[in-house]
View 1 (cartoon, rainbow, N blue to C red):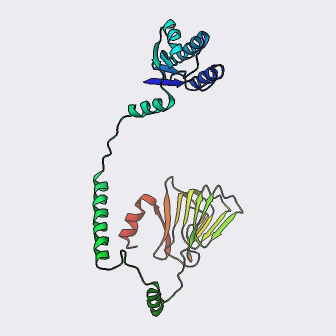
View 2 (view 1 turned 120 degrees about the vertical axis):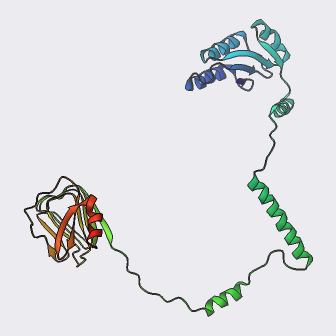
View 3 (view 1 turned 180 degrees about the horizontal axis):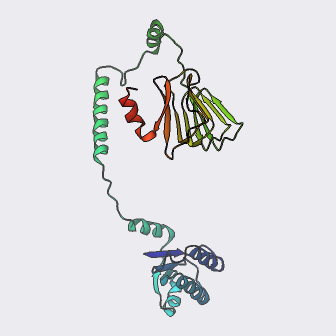
Length: 280
């Protein structure tokens, strides 16, 4: 990779320290590169060339040549550098443009199809004009609005929004309660003395040791889920667990649901198979 340094527009006493700072920002990025310094009409002193070479070599860059006015050639030769006569600003811009690689624009299949579509559209417009028609058919907005007014508006009917879910993070301690129209999800433990009441289902990602009442408005399809189900009182709709306060929670996720007028508890992994067998 070659680097061209344009140093002819500023004082070298300012430009060289700035160049060194830039190279220190990305140490090693240009390592192994060769650089050419363009000084324009200015004539650098020998000390400037020595400083420039030091800065570049510190970044792993080799100063291979310089360009500028004819008076710079003996200085470059004395330092063992190649010299190139720098062209006038306009000529230099033309030279750089000529060195740019020529890129051939290639259209993708999709782009070519669009070109064909546009060509077809132009031909269609030309045919319309030859027949005295408008290039683009226009919609009569007044006639369209009259048709819309003639149509009967659709009948409106209220839509009942489904109940939402209350999401609670943290432990519920004795004396605390969550009441919600919808489902309740608790990420944490529900200690003895705490209470959960939901019109939908209850899901506890932790130990459920308090009171849980799901389907509080009579929904017997509601369920109670917990990673450890040991509620002191368990209710679903109007059904109350028969063994409240005596059951120790199993060391696996369980679900409680209504079956034959009683609350049944089953491991969560077998819940789907069990309810399908019982015809739930």
